[in-house]
Length: 316
Image (cartoon, rainbow, N blue to C red):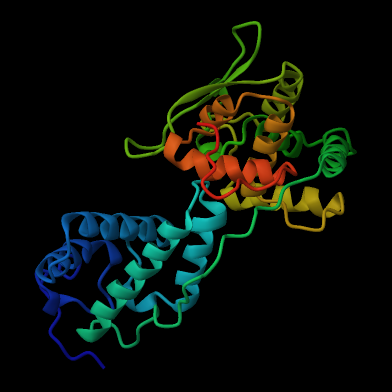
């Protein structure tokens, strides 16, 4: 049992001695930075570890109490980094983030701020990350057929079809989908355009305008008539949209759960197989040239091409 006296303002610990299981994750970052600096860590290392902690805050929520963070939460965080965040996670970055977790929680445990260290059981991975799962052309047609049935059924619902066609056409990630406004689909020109906005100044995704097929407009009109969104385009929760994708996959007998990440990779591979310029695909996904190298290699592999030989370079 932690018998140390709690600080006067428990959410703002003034020193390491003030940290305890009830301290919020976001209130430990500065003290962790100070400890790293005292231990002789370079400015680059301190910055990298800090960035990793900010990602953990994004996943768990900065208000998460230290004592409530379990090993399962950390494993889920690492899975999110690799498969669900929508940003490529190289083997080097993955390994460093595991190191960050181990250093951070060891620091907290050694000070008795938390009773157990949840990062002890987190294991480093060796070898390359497995390729993402994508929908085959036949599976895409099957899922589109299910969405069409839902759109024109006894109780018509255009939302599954609109979500599916937007993700196939653009490859936007879940957070970007949730930020869409009805007016972000610009119908003024000869070709409709989706305006993808940044969520925050630090967001790696640039604002971009992505062309859409004009066939999506009747679907959009039906959806707007049915749901009458007043603010964001999709008025339900992100989890509800995930359920919609999963349901489409189940009804189409897709053997793997359909997710936003699967749709993102499927969209990119479809573009590449259709002959779109790799740089256009990179810009569509909002990726930097650095992160694109690994992503493009995986897109080529998912398209059935041989892996790059040692020393080979992907298009930039």
